[in-house]
Image (cartoon, rainbow, N blue to C red; front, side, top):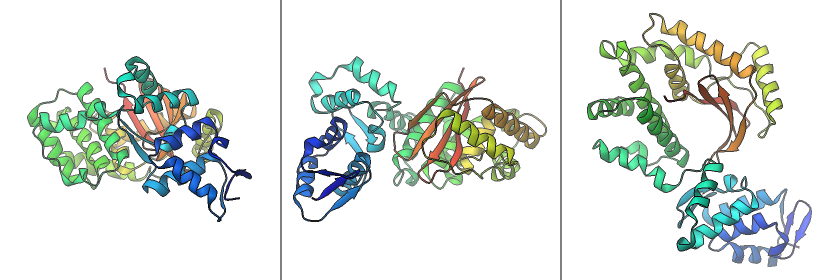
Length: 335
């Protein structure tokens, strides 16, 4: 007796569900490692198959993020656990038989689970190349989640603003001075674009805008702690209870909150602080009166997203591994 999963002794690989067996096959030494664990004398106990396979990934790779070469796709095992058994099996086939990939089927699976493959993520490299930008040190130690954030901001910016070499270079230079990581760089980059496209972007400074809005954002960083996976009505009740306690649902980070505010107020108003507070009041009201339309694990595996379809916008709330519920993205839908 060496492996116990949910109080059940595992004596051979095929006792695992089809999904877990497929996830084990993604690892180059997966089957051999499981068989070795079964044969050893020490007892290992796991509360679920999901916990077992995550620990197996960590033991073999020191990471739960894998790269499926033939697709190609980087994705966390926690995200893969969200896929149906059939869709996961399709990915396994696609990742091992490049010549047999059904492009339409693959595109359908990626779209269904909001997965961004390497071909699309290459937009980041193309962006740097197009504007002859230096790949700064913030990118060297960036997490996969940071890369996905930058990708999303680039997509939004290209759809929303008229980008020129001069504008992009100036925005990157300013964002680099403000940021401590790649996600912050992405947020500040878009803040600059929004500021530059306002009247004040031709007369003032983006630093002045940040200085005015910083207190508003800082006062809205507190968030409730909830169960990691919630039904829409339970999430609704958690938000409502938090609001009834006299608190706004906080932003996931300062830079994410700053960008959310900047994208949803008129920067040409005389009192942007009042505009920001009015926006937050309206947003909280909208969240309280709307049920989440979808829930899914992020591709990097670091949190669960809850999607809200609001008037002319989408809001994405996060629940991280500690259960902290916060507002991640609230961007206007690009015209």
